[in-house]
Image (cartoon, rainbow, N blue to C red; front, top):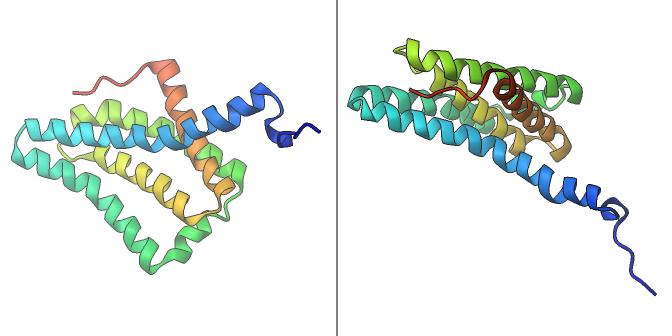
Length: 162
């Protein structure tokens, strides 16, 4: 008697989605944002100690604030989990596009580390949605944000950084 594979992995397309595309999305989305944050902080330090410290503080502030909320007011984050999946996908898609616009324009024209704040806020959304929600709810934020990044890159190209 031949042992059957689980129904969801019966064909190569389903296998490809579950074993390649889905893990790539869950891994690549926060790694991409993390890479941009590290790059901007590194680049700011090349411009001097004070710009570097401001950039690093811009990265830390949203992470510290969301960590505070996660530890002391977790119910606020859990309310984000109650947002309908389709709405959270489209909201994250728009956030992804806005993040890329901010990276493109505010890196050049702002002494305040706006790009770092926005990237860190986005990274915080991804990290804390992963630890706060059940998996299928979290995925709407990941898929939405990476879709926003990709839409931006398709239509306007990758933002040239400093």
